[in-house]
Amino acid sequence: MASSPRSVLGVRALNRATLDRQLLLSRSAMSAYDAVAHLLGLQAQNVKPPYYQLYARLAGFRPGELGRLMEERDVVRMVTMRSTIHTHTASDALMVRPLVQAARDREVGYFRKGLAGVDLGVLAERARRFVEEEPRTMGEIREELLRQWPGADPQSLSVAARCLLPLVQVTPRGVWGRSGQVRLTTLETWVGQSPREEPEGIDAVVLRYLGAFGPASVKDMQTWAGITRLREAFERLRPRLVTFRDENGVELFDLPDAPRPDPDTPAPPRFLPEFDNLLLSHADRTRVVPPEFKGLNAHGNQSRCVLMVDGFLGGVWAGGAGGVTVELFREVTGAVEEEIAAEGEAMLAAMGEGPGKVRFGSIRG
Image (tube, rainbow, N blue to C red; front, side):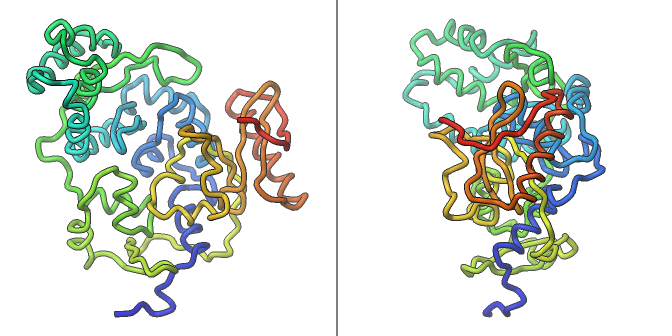
């Protein structure tokens, strides 16, 4: 059946709905813990981004709030979706990791030449015992495994251990204002619980994904999760969901009572760090990245810190001595420039990186 005009969501409608779910239309009064749970994790390839992600989304957020959650083991850093490090609540880590395990197993297969003669079951058990004695660096894990398989490729052994086991980065790594090597132990050892043998079903995760990133297509969620074959779950849930079409005719699913604000709702400027999931969790990213700016939020394979203007990618920013430098992708009014400067200066003060100024110019590299 063809979609009626009302069931078609334009780019701005999708943008405002997504920003609302992402707590970016106005800052939320949620706690840091509740926000990490609502967002189903924060991309955390680097140490600081999760803190900046929460600052952009929460009223009154200060880095110490997330730091304490990490030290108390209520929040953890580990490899989950898309084989990248995410900051999750401990509860969600116990749920999400088993759901993406099949993808991590396939990843090991890409390194099979370097693992010739290696029994993966034995490798997993040996690595588990080693890291559960005390947290270890990846170099130490690799050396331990090379003792048993000296002819194996060292990198392949590291990848196998990282993929086969639910390894978390223990504190002080990841705690704001502190430093430390990446040391790893199993999720079970760190939080004192084991992943459920029958983890929460994918249907429940679909509903939570839509709550944080919807309206969305099946391919959108597959992009976010880094897994495939989710169509069956969406079809099971269809009676509980509402559907729309985007302007290209792609079917979008959503929760019936989820917010879908007016497309003309104001969206304030927001400074987001590199690898923010807002820009990584849909197959079609035009809801937040204008086609003419595609690729400008990255330099090679390195994501850049981005500035959202009127809800869309509008520039990039970089920190430096005495403040941040902003490179805008298009001209803005003086009033908008003042809003951007005020937001950036408030961010620097709140994150303890200031006082500092926002400069408008060109960012090299």
